[in-house]
Length: 252
Ligand SMILES: [Zn+2]
Image (cartoon, rainbow, N blue to C red; front, side, top):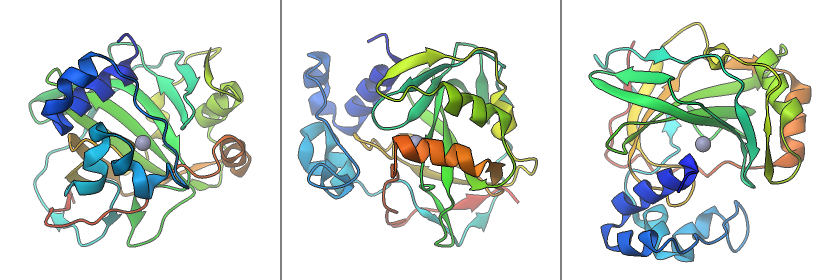
């Protein structure tokens, strides 16, 4: 279980379905899933016992970000180090795997940056509106809980780091190393207003272990780089999920 994604899936599956832990230990491979069709998002919960939360969970992601309540949720203390990320095409997205040492601290909990990856269109919506893309910065605490920072992206000015990642992105499943370090902080908008809610992974097994922090401001990336991503993954966003009884908070 050297791959952090496998580890994350393992931890997440244990939490989603404790009875399945032994199955996960036996490392029976998770079934193949897609966004559309028989193995698509509407049917994820039926593909495998370990994916049950996708169908029956009550705190699923993504959601429409509307009706937020202002609250004293503290800030996002982000300490991400520039590094030559390993860029992976995992069959579902383009993902940049992080080296150890980049952190997000929320209150008293420190989370380590594991990876970031992209979706098109954005998974979260602002009052029903989705944007061209969304980046997810996935962090894990020592107890396996996750904190994800989401940044919605629109077509506009060229974004150098995103351009570098798209240039390096393998066309098929596989990995490549960036030629020079990039600073993931360049994906953060200047304004740090954000939405916070308790949610889930937006991909199977949809485990409800994620503290979501989605920035209210968007960033711009080149339309041509969005097209490059769409050439690999035309649509990799889960449909919006019901908010149910959750509180959506905002820090300002
Ligand atoms: Zn994601």
